Amino acid sequence: MTQEEALRWIAGLFYETPECLTPDTARADIEAWDSLGTLSLLASLDSDFGIVLPDEEIQDLKKVGDILLILQRNGKLDLEAQVVE
Amino acid sequence: MVKTSGARFAGICTCVPATTFHNLTDTVEFSEQEIRKVTGLAGVDSRRLAGESVCSSDLCAAAAQKLLNRLGWAPDSINALIMVTQTPDYILPSTSCVLHHRLGLDDRCAAFDVGLGCSGYPYGIWLAAMMLQGGMRRVLVLHGETPTRFADRADRSVSLLFGDAGSATALEAAEPGRAADWHFALHTDGSAYGAMIIESGGFRNRFSEDARRYCVQMDGARIFNFTIKRVPALIEETLCGAGITVDEVDYFIFHQSNQFIMKHVCTKQGLPLDKVPIILKEFGNTGGASIPLTFTEGGLKRPADRALRLLLLGYGVGLSWGSALVELDPKAILESMELDHAKEKL
Image (tube, rainbow over all chains, first blue to last red; front, side, top):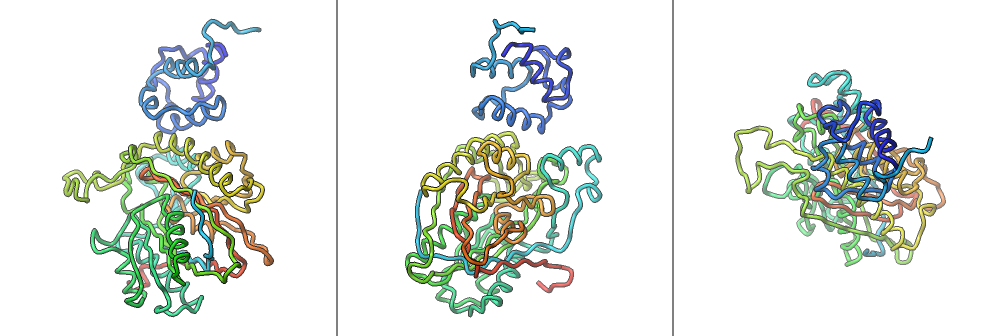
């Protein structure tokens, strides 16, 4: 998955438009990323990618880039890849 | 995995308070939008509230009395009473002793409490099955919780979720060779004990000026993460240990934690939703008592000619989790009732 695709996936989770999100977008700036949004994120990481986070990593989720990092660390995001139109 | 033999359910009776609290119309702490968001996810429309004068023991005593009457069991025929609860009447004595008295049981009856919450029912059934295997004839497992009494009404992560319930389960030694073996898997991860905790009121922090310290604090994300990690593995372990498949189980009776979590686990494990009764809409999360409550309120279809094979799944506070693969034969009684504390003299 490319970064653009990953941002689209994250935007879908939080009812945002992908163009509004960058790796630096903070959790506090995403209205739907509240405690329930975190549950939705954890569920989607599991169901869409088979990723279940260690507890300590949940506390570290503070911006969009943290989610991208998790996807990358688990081999689901290739920062070098380009979207094929 | 452990296995027991020679136990059967004689009956289960559950009791909920008569007072119904409708989340959308009765909640004053949150906006309608907030309520809809939380209840939509959790699947809880209404809940039963015990109020300040009703304890778990009251709900369990009412359920037990009705069940004993239905079964025609004499009080002196019961060898043991196990009370599973995290909302006891007192710090001491054990609530089981209070209930022993209220039910008029014999002084040859063992009685003790088990201080487990959401995982408590499989543990209680396992203990009873072991005791029956060891020579006892009749055991009562009472499991009741009044979590609405320790929920901070201003904390939306818990206040819209919890309901109160009590239950009584009567188990007895089966005729030799007439009952299937039961299988249990029991687990603990104490490192995360703080993920769901009431900090004050016990002897670690006896008193607090902050009333919230007497209410439950729950790290919802951590509990969710625990569930999606542990419960699927628990299901696999139990089925594998018993040598059966999902198709060979009639119902998966989950602790009714939260609809979102339960459905996620079902999807992950490929459990057909018609095999997973959900009663959250009407009763909310009633702690570990939600498992027996699902027996009586979950609309189980019971064939007249064979026992139902049920996989019971308890998980939560502790963190503690456990399963029980059991059979419910057609003769076992399932009953439910309400307790109107305004009318009852407790």
